[in-house]
Figure 1 (cartoon, rainbow, N blue to C red):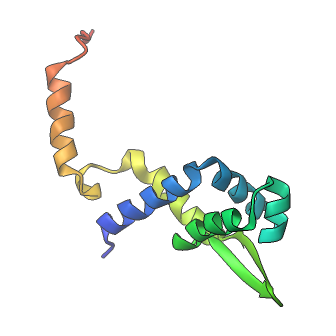
Figure 2 (cartoon, rainbow, N blue to C red; figure 1 turned 90 degrees about the vertical axis):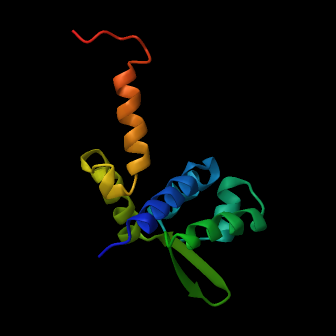
Length: 123
């Protein structure tokens, strides 16, 4: 049986990770090709420690593949994990609150809809 709370946390971590402008650029670049930190540094005009810090965020959620060649590490997008995250997001509209362990939110949602807070009349 899958752990819904952990899955929810994983997708939130994914969204937080890619919501950063620099990480979004890195995501696109490593989706195109295997790149090392020095190449990313040159392309983005950022320092090596800065790039390494962003790469560590991708590693934390298993979103990068790392291939070592001599003293260099080359990074590419882990497409399997990326597609897994996208699959979860694509299912979201079809899942009910309970299956996402969001019962408390469902109660507030239903209560708010009943109260018609925006004074919109249903025709």
